[in-house]
Length: 320
Image 1 (tube, rainbow, N blue to C red):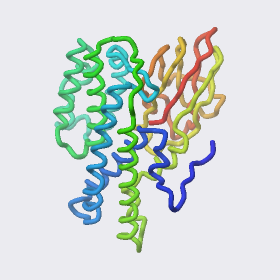
Image 2 (cartoon, rainbow, N blue to C red; image 1 turned 30 degrees about the vertical axis):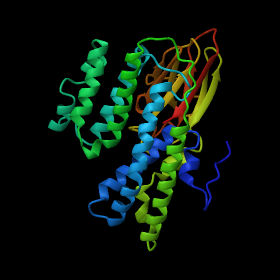
Image 3 (tube, rainbow, N blue to C red; image 1 turned 90 degrees about the horizontal axis):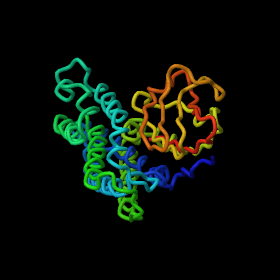
């Protein structure tokens, strides 16, 4: 795939997120979180934070509305049943993110997961939805958990929207994403402006500005979506990549066929599935953690096995 045109006078943040609202959210969240962390001690960080925060909030609000209307960027509205099916994967991801800040043995962690994961993954639909709301309340205004809280709020909003139209047929309404696209561009413009301010402020040593921008994500976003067709009982390489944050890296996998898939990490593109893999059910869209697929520090190839002996698999893997 050809590289996107990252040039001196090109807004690299807008280019990197042009075809992905998820990338824009990730770039914005990292930038805002890094600025906020230093806002009390670094004057330029406070200035940049005040510049970008309103644009970030506007974008995230528009994104919640858009996802609530469309379910996914592929235009399919997920039913409540489908959301609850993928919820354990999300819960696992939330816990990993929170454990990166608070050890599982700490009082703070136990406040958020007083009953472990069971209340989130089992029980009635209403109780599980309420458990997600309770987790959001327990996180509260904890700045260190801003990023993961945003993800939980987004998922909670989708659950509530799906509950309102419980198990209705798929929507055929074409959602107007003009507002979301406008706010994405506004956010990227503000981040680009902040880059200029940071370079000017740290012109003697511009490396001091690096932590406020996710350079790894910008480079990785050169290709984030992979379409695969896999013959029956065959495996195929989807991605070869080392991820900057393997413990929290996630993928959205859209399985459009009535086939069960196994997704795993391997040493080569011809590597066979072993004991560690994730199972993707037929006709499903879900979110999956890299750590459940193997060790990315040694196994760089993400491969997919089609377990069906008759049907060719048709899938899209999206790097989040």
